[in-house]
Length: 198
Image (cartoon, rainbow, N blue to C red):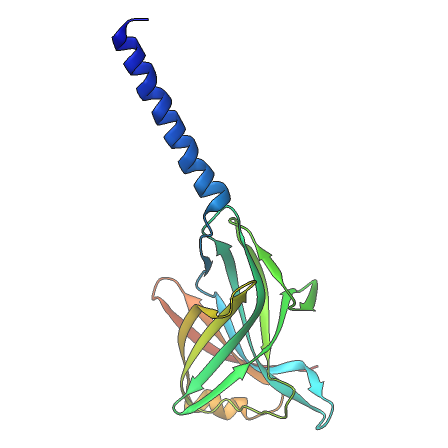
């Protein structure tokens, strides 16, 4: 084999090996990150279940989003919760329930592939007697996730939402909640209330 062909063959072999190594790293070894898309809708209001002690529906936070992984390996979520802050008041909604209209289940682990999964995520108040009323003002909502084998939580989403005086007055009525629907053109949420009859 001529010297020139040997050198060219060696260069191509090295390039192929390099590409294979990069592909293997991207596919099998890179951990990547857990991400969430902009929630299309957020809800503040009463849950369908009632607190057995007071026979009143407890308030919850609900949102719909796509969770996805930036690596081929995917991610495993152990738990999720949201934190809701208004002025100096802060409340964690630590009971995580997810699913679709076809059925909900208590969050106890979720695998998130690179292609992503879309679910309704319901976050309820802890069962320690805590209560939280949706008063008028600006709210900072942060959604956290804890991954398996991780000691810390990661911040998936931060939103700023406003409850007006008029909407807060409506929320003081029984079976009334407020929806924040994302407007992609104006890049902001539009709020409207809904009263449930059942």
